Length: 341
Ligand code: CUA
Image (tube, rainbow, N blue to C red; front, side, top):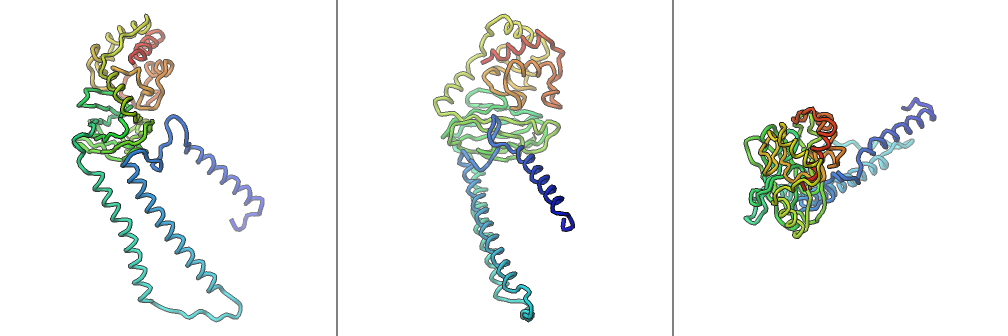
């Protein structure tokens, strides 16, 4: 760098700034699946983690400023000056060494005690009144079951604000990690054991979630959404989910239902009263969801047709096979799925 001419240096600086700007543009803040952030917490769990993060950050900033100030002072005070004698050389200073050992032990305690308290707090058993949601992390989507409410859904978990929710996490295949940045996590979802995460969301809204443990080809596409409702809206959602699936209105959707019932779809998907497969998501109220393919695509007729005709193209490695549906067949299936409100 030191040998570069000023114009070359300016060009390099401009390139660097541009590269950083392009990289930073990837960190969008607004959008339908953002923000993926822990610094806007919307649950008790999220607030605890954020408070701890801020505590550590402020202490780190304070220490940084203190150390830099002493360093800069020493550089200035003992700078080389013409005619100045070499400063007195010392070796070892017991008082200083004790003080900076004790000071940092105290800082570690200030950070460590609340950290340990919050670790234990977030591991407590759920209250008996907590709403239980059984979460299965699968390659590559999320299944949500409400055993007390007799509801099964996928990739969109609905919970009421102000109510404690106990997520019971289990993985039928490989290790995943459950993470809703604004509400809580990450917590590993491990085959053969049940991990728990307990939190009380405080603000209605939609919060993106993401698998946070590399689990195979479509790990990055293993998303989901947590939809926090007011108490009344949650009750409406529960009633709608418990109702039997809607009968398709219109000829195309009716055709889609017949096609679904005759094809291999029934081997993997449940639609109550129509089929009982359990390998793929329960589709009983598919039409009420905003997203599909593990939260990566919006539910629209065009996206559904594309998905049915070539699922692997939209979620690489997906277990759903291409059943060779074309033209009117895939449009009919899409119309049927959309009718399942
Ligand atoms: Cu599941 Cu990564």
